[in-house]
Length: 289
Image (tube, rainbow, N blue to C red; front, side, top):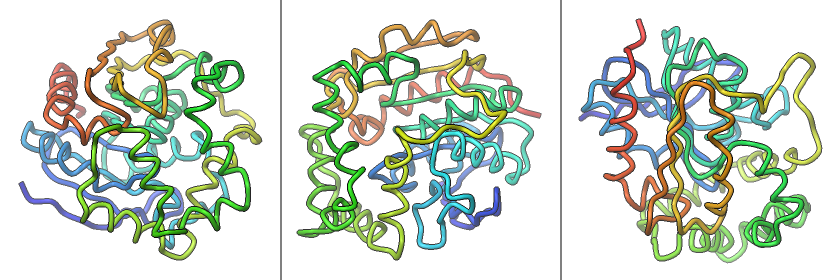
């Protein structure tokens, strides 16, 4: 399966994308500290199953990718996803999101429910129990120490130190026992070293607790798209207990898969298991016209 790289103009940005295949669109959205290339295995799997699979870099993740409006909140990344669907020439798409990509996918499903066929999210649950955990759950607060650290200007100096040792630490804590291949680790750090990228990506966290969506944008409501949610039971970033109560937020059907032996980066730790779950779920959908 041949992978292609190009840029796609959408929402005021030239998004670098990786793509393969032809057919219904499956748009794959990555998280932090990650990049679009981590979807390559899933892209190839989806393409082999008859999908046009596309993974864009999220806004801020390349040197010329600073948000035109200064916003890195889910409403902004969700609007990017909807704009990319249109720019790629589709009226509708399946969305696959991991970590911050999951947050963007939830937002897109809220803002453009008629544009989303099926939704697959991983590693970041949906619902008020997540926000409550940041306030009241000591275990989750310990897992989320980095979110609070990233609020400090000091973080911009600390993250690159010792060859981005903090990035290595997050991967080790979030996916215990998993080692990112050295070539991928080097490429990830080179991405963060591009001018502006580190501060742009840290701004996702710096806007997390302090800003609200613009007038007329409503997030957090029930989601009508049929949804598959996948979470690793060994996730050291977001506790699996945060999935409790999720089903109540999905009116079009909800399926929960908890994967034993997988952590936060479950699509890399157990790629075949995750890919089979995704394609089996999307395979039930009617292709977009």
